[in-house]
Length: 275
Image 1: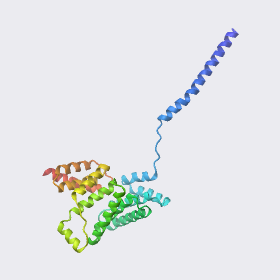
Image 2: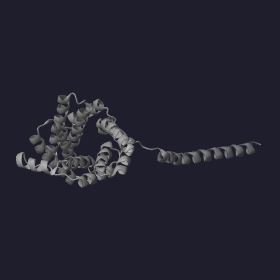
Image 3: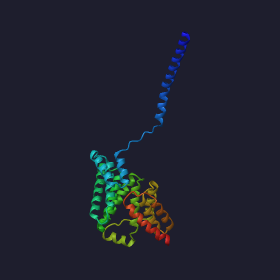
Image 4: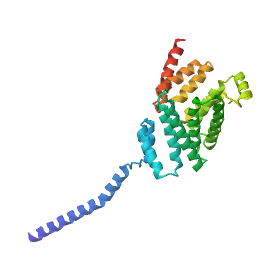
């Protein structure tokens, strides 16, 4: 009996040892499998958080983060054009009754953009947002100064698109430039050239091309559908204008001026659908 008992004990110990060895060998495989299934969350940078806040029109948060990052990284050109974009957005968020406050933001935007260009003249976004800030300021200046500003805006947009042909913001503004300039009749252009300098030349076809390309690059922005719809109305393409505006109404509101454009499109849609 003692011999039989000893054999049983030895067999039990052997089985336990084998089981422990098997589990030890299995754990690394289980750990490796779990490691494969665990998704590592990408690190979100402060600038990305500020960008998200800006598109949600939470301008105080965006301003706080951008300003802090710029203080710590004064040579980061990416922060200068973002600050210019923010200042343009802040200006647009102020009611038209307070033009002085709006202009202060647009001047700050131009200053940030110019600083960015000084740091790196090959950064397309700095040229884009300099053009944007100049364009926003153009409404409150005299005709002669407005024409000078128009030529500077065009140069900045041309530079931005030479550096980055797929800059959707620059394309959108270029489309607006061509559309506005196209509305200047030949007589007004002739008079302007004779008395106050060269008047910008526009073309609805060029404007349409710019807006369509901007939409193909980023389909979120309401202004591109609205501006393109206005061109379609001008050319008699009522059906496409209606389609464009209905599409725009389903897009997210990303900037303050989107609210105004939505109201304008609703009025236009009522008018066009009744005709």
